[in-house]
Amino acid sequence: MTKRELVISVAMQLGMTQSDVAKIIESAFDAITQALARGDRWELRDFGVFEVKTRASRIGRNPRTGEQVPVPERKVVNYRPGKKMKQIICGEHDGSSQNDPAVSSGGE
Image 1 (tube, rainbow, N blue to C red):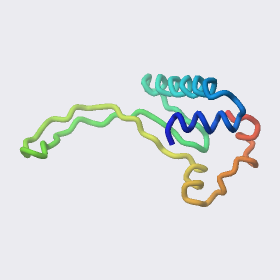
Image 2: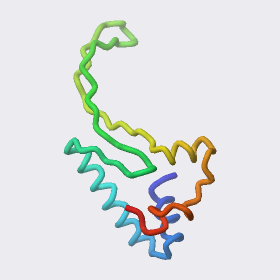
Image 3: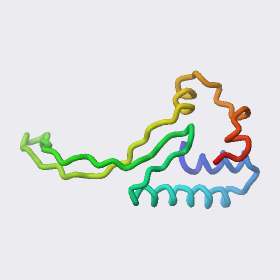
């Protein structure tokens, strides 16, 4: 699913304009990105956790020449799916949010 498809889907579900939904989604993504850039952990219950991890420096190898090359330390974003996400993906949950109080009452 692309961001555009997400905007269309949410706009249809909520009866909002696509431009309003696009602004909301863009703002949410910006806030998440800024939090991760600060090194904060970002968690959305049942969906998952995004966090920044540091990969240690190491010695890599150039595949063409076989030469050893130093690979510097770097930061990467790591995602760990939540329990409900795992259940839905594995087919253990029907995927509906009707009985979920967090979703039906507006969520977090």
